[in-house]
Image (cartoon, rainbow, N blue to C red; front, side):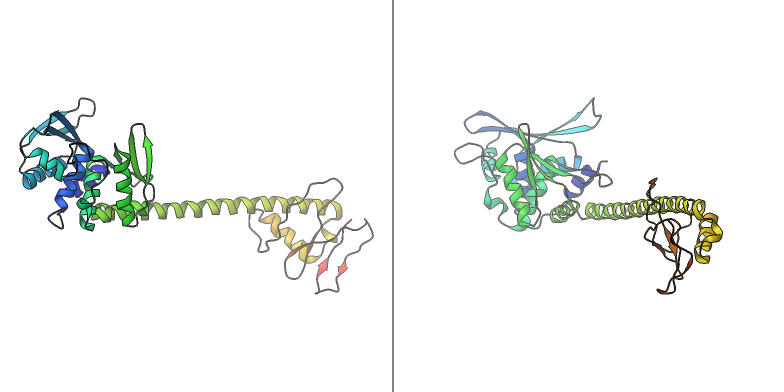
Amino acid sequence: MSFTAEVKDELARVLPECSHCGKATLAALVRIEGTLFVSGPGRYRVEIATDVPSVARLVIKLLHGIYQLRTELTVRRSVLHKTPNYLIEVPAQPHLPKSLLDLGVITKEGGLEVGIRPDIVAKQCCAAAYVRGAFLGSGFIANPRGDFHFEITVESESLAEGLVALLADKGIKARIMQRRSSYMVYLKSGNAILEFLAFVGAHQCALRLEQERVVKSVRNDVNRMTNAEIANQAKSSSAAVDQLFAIRTVLEAHGMENLPPALQEFIRLRVSFPTRASRSSASARTRRSPNRRSIIAFGASSSLRAKPQTEKGSGSAGNSPEDGMHSRKVG
């Protein structure tokens, strides 16, 4: 069973909070999933199709319980999808026109209702019931293990705007996108989908969605930490290569015996452990220029410092009067 089917199965079992909630749910189902046939003045026939058996039972229960309408159920099997489809037919009968008027499907003049009639969703529980019926009719929620996506497809732009307004009253920001001859009310945020499920009463599916969100959040954090560690290791390796190049340049020019003791110790440690990161963060990249060489000085604090370049042969090894630092000026 898909996650959409699980949500619909749970919503079909939600008990109404007041005597008008059932009518609001049925009104949305008939408006979105129903097909109205007109054979003459005041002669109507309605067909409602669904793939979820619990939704089919709910529609029949509401039609019988609220309006005492006669219904016929046909179970069809799709050769392509290999899933049953339930067709509920409400044949022409004396009480059907009045029932359709009460549900907000037709107007008093016999035309089709465009938007959502305010008296059907006057109470907050009835508004939740109407949105619940709309999702039972043509709703879809993607598997929470993947990307978050929610949509309800309707045929009328006014109906889509009405659903958006009902969700906005609850603080859920939905958007409308036209898709060919229909309109899609959709949500892309995980928080918004979670609020919708809680609003319409699908609490078990909301808990499952929240669990999947936590798992995805932890997985994303681990991936970020891993990527950061790999990047740090790459930077350390690059810095070590630059330092080894600088060491070779200094040794070729001056020899090991002419360097300060602290710098000699650093060179021995770096050559012995080329991939080990040094405590100092001074790993400036050496510019490989034929007319310029990097100068490295190592002091008592074990920190590398860049020294200014002087004329070759003009400097001599010795102790610097500043901070007791040992330095070597190389031209």
